[in-house]
Amino acid sequence: MKQFKRIKFNDLPEKIRSCLQNTAKEADNICNQASAVQKTKIDGKISFIYTQSAPMDILSDFEKAQSVCFISRYEHLPIFEGPSIFIHRGKFFLENIGSLRQILNEYRPIIQNQTDSVYYTKIHKFCREKLMNADPSKGLSITVEHEKDGDITSKFTKILDERNKSLKIILKNCEFGYIYNGILQHSDHQYTKRFLNEYNSGKINHIFIKHAFVLGYVKDYLLCHYKIINQLTFPKLGPI
Image (tube, rainbow, N blue to C red):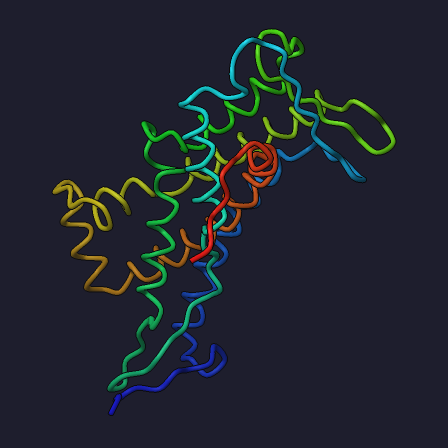
């Protein structure tokens, strides 16, 4: 029989509530900095027009693989729903730490591994090049059409650039290098002393919570890139 019970936030001791609130504020501050560069807005429906008249496939073999990998990963990126806490022998623990670790791991190729084809700057470059190409005879050209304003490709490209900048701000103000290289994916000894201290003190729980929270914004900032690439990606996931 389990020797613990789940605890609602309002039933937690003031010290723990305060720590969780401070963690949320730290995450909010990072996300607010990232959101501040989002200046360009588009109201109304848009559509993408794909044109290609060059004597080649729409996408190169590398781009085909890149698009499939990005779409299949993006569609299954998990979103953190908040901490679940239980009490055991008078102490409070994070019940869903396993889910937190999984969430953090799922985003690694997109935000940390710069050699991966789905790394966010490579995905941005892929989309931007197609949007900036006004000559379909040289390769795939993507035009963005607004329901009322017509061709808004330049404006949409500016939105993508701002979203890419927001991602850079998030990553600059986070410690994913420590999380991936010192804890989750690797055990780099330069982080061992810090990890042992934060693991034993319980601070690592708050670091996981903070970083898992901001990953929801990472997924949101890549939504436009996903919409562009999704129309080009075949095959789709097959049935069982």
